[in-house]
Length: 358
Ligand SMILES: C[S@@+](CC[C@H](N)C(=O)[O-])C[C@H]1O[C@@H](n2cnc3c(N)ncnc32)[C@H](O)[C@@H]1O
Image 1 (cartoon, helix red, strand yellow):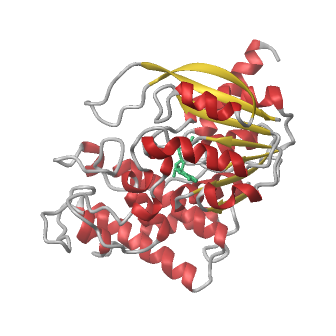
Image 2 (spheres, helix red, strand yellow; image 1 turned 45 degrees about the horizontal axis):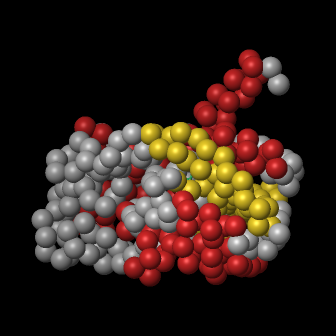
Image 3 (cartoon, protein in one colour; image 1 turned 90 degrees about the horizontal axis):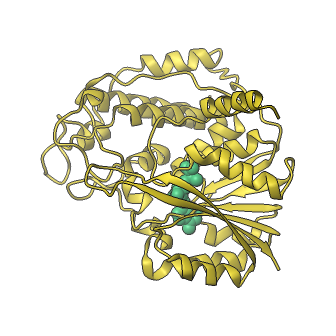
């Protein structure tokens, strides 16, 4: 491919891959490198799973490269992202509204409701546990979110939208919520004062749909429960590498995706998340979690993204991976993720391990 063509392809990929929020450990900026390395080993057209898909940026990039992708995650909101980004190859018909554009207009016009989000997460709320209002959202945005949640729930209950349309509406709500959330990086806590972004009214934009060639599927669940059922030619693993639990740090997105009204605990209003905790976030369990999954995976090629400063030390990880096949490592310098100004800055090595099974 000429340099010019390859640059054009890369910039197209970048444009289509952008997700409008920061997600701990997301590989949105690394997809070209990751997919390029995978393409050197297994040809486009093969089947590959991304069972810890997060934003589904890697899933989508794999689909764009011509793979048939199975995406999954232990949490519900990444599954919503994956359904929207992989399965909606074109705008669904949204018959209930008379087309996709009308569905977006509907999202924009739903009246506010002073409901669960207003009470628990809005700056004029009155949290059930008696604490001061939580400043995750302005009162008006919290009420708009409540209105949209109620509207989507009613549509789904009455059967006027199908599962993919339902996921697309939730995906839009999550993306729009991320833009006006009063947080620095994650939803672990909110900022002391409403930021300029948080004061802006929530907006809903039309999504971009991508006609990728493969057959894709998406499902929900921790990998430990379904690794042995994956019937694909390769698996790409991108487990958490820090101690920060996704279920707690993104509790609000999980609540949007699950469409429920859980107890909002403590100052941060976290949904009970311990049942969804990932072993990869605990230094003492992470090595075992790798082993448990690798023992179950019955596929010829396994690719693993893991950071140089992950919970499992690089020497220990290599010992584990070597038990399962021939290991090669590719490296890419990468800017360290920062969710607030206190976090460490600098460049670290992102690693892509390839295990060719014995
Ligand atoms: C580093 S992020 C993945 C980022 C993703 N590749 C992206 O580009 O957005 C790790 C993901 O693994 C998920 N996860 C953690 N433990 C899991 C498990 N045991 N099974 C499945 N998913 C898990 C988290 O919910 C999170 O979405």
